[in-house]
Amino acid sequence: MSKSYMQGFTTQAKEIEISQLPITGTLPAWLDGTLVRNGPGQFEVGNQTYRHWFDGLAMLHSFTFKNGQVSYVNRYLRSNAYHKDNATGKVNFQGFAVDPCRSLFSRVMSMFWQPEDGNNTVVNVTQLAKHYIAMTETPMAVEFDPRTLETLGVMAYQDNFDSQIATAHPHYDYQRGIGLNHSTKFGATTFYQLYAMTEKERRIIASIPVKQASYIHSFGTTEKYLILAEFSLRLPNALSLAVRNKPFIENFQWQPETDSIFYVVDKESGKVVAQVAADAFFAFHHINAYEAGDTIIVDISAYEDAALIGHLYLDALRDPASGHPVIGQFRRYTLPLKGGRATYEHITNESIELPRINYKQHNGRDYHYAYGGSVKHGTQDFLNQLVKIDVKKRTALCWYESGCYPGEPVFVPAPNAKAEDEGVILSVVLDSRQNTSFMLVLDAQTFTEVARAAVPQHVPFGFHGQFFSGI
Ligand code: CO
Image 1 (cartoon, rainbow, N blue to C red):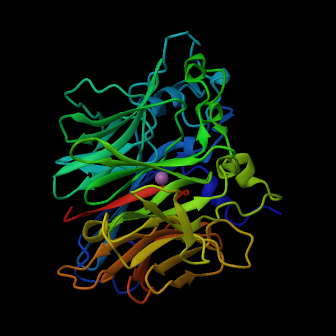
Image 2: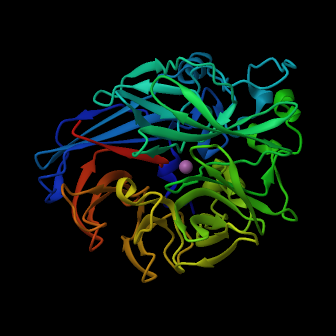
C-alpha cells in the first residue's frame, strides 16, 4: 500500500496562473497581501532522482489575497541548477544530499568548497528592502518578482563576504532595521560567522572559531542576543567537504557523547557572553527565545538525535514500511548566564515542526502562542495536523481533517490587532483524497476554519513561506 501523502512528494510539472480560486467560506476583507511559499517542485531529472526532500528543484507558489478573493501562481525558480539539470538531464549541483559521484563536478582539490553561483534556492523566501529573495543553505540568494514569480537572477550584494554555508532562516531586527543570519566559513580554522544583512551588504558581527562545525539550520534571537544552538551533529574534518566524496550532509557525524552548546552572542559587540552546555540533541527549527533575568529561554522543536535527516530521504518517505518520523518535541531550554548547564522541559505533548509565531510583535520577547505542523496522536503518518500551543497555559488546539496534510502555518496579524493571536493562519494543505491542494485559512484565536481556496492541482510539500503585506 502506498502512503496516502505520496502525492506531496511528486513533481508538479504544470505552471498555472488563476485569478480567482474557488472559495468555501469567507475570507477576511482586511487580508491584503501575498503569501509566497518555497519548496521542491521537481523530484527527478532525466532518469535521475534527487535523493532528499531538501534537494528537489525549487518552485515558488504565491497566493495573493485582496478584496475577499485569492489568486494563485506557481513558477519554477529559473536558477542555474534548474536550467543546467533540465538541459543535461542530470543532477549537476551540490545540494544537501546530492551524490557528488553522479554530478558533473570534477572533484578538484580546490582548497575549500565554494557554493555555486545561482544554486537551487529551495528552502525559504524573504525580503530585503525592495528585493525579494529565495534562499537555501548558502549565503547566495536568488531574486524574484513577488507578483509574477519571475526569476530575476542572483542577488548582487556589494561586499566580499566569505562563508560557504548559511541558514535559510535569517531573522529581522525591526529595532535595528537589519537582517541577521548565521554562516559557517570552513578552512584550516573553521569559523561560525554571525552577520547582519541589508540589501547591499553582509557585515560580520561575530566570528567564532570552532574545532568541528555543527550542521545548523536556524538560530534564535532575543532583544540583546543572538542564540546559536550547536547540535551534536558535527563535521569531524572540514577537508572532507572539499574532497567531495560524500553528499554535503553525509560528511557530518552524530556524536551523542558530546554536549550540544548554546552560544549567546551580544548583537552589538559580537562578544560571546556565554557558552552553555546541554545534553546532545538535534533540531532544525528554533521557535522563539527571550531574556528572563539571569537566564535565557530558548524554545525549540527538538529531537533526541539527528536520525530525522535520514528519514527525510525521498526513498524513506515513499517507503510504505517506514514510520512517522517528524515528531519534534516542544522543548523549552533554560540557559543560566552565570554558569551551569542548560536544562529543558516539555511545553506540550503535541509534536511540533515548521513552527511559527506572531513574529513581528513577539520574536525575541516573551510570548503566548506558537503554531506548527504536527502528527496527530495515534496516527502513523506524515505531518497531518496543525497545532496552536499556548506556552503559558501549556494547552493545545488542533486542526485535523482525515486525508489532509497541512504545511507550515503562517500567522498574519489583523490590522491594529490588540491580542497576540488576533489574525489568521495560512497553510497550504494537500488533500490526498483528491490529489489536489487547498489554501486553508484559520481564525488564529479559535483555530477553526474561516475559509479554504481550492487549487486545481497538487502543491508538492514545501518548507517555508512569508506573507508580504500589500503586494
Ligand atoms: Co527550515
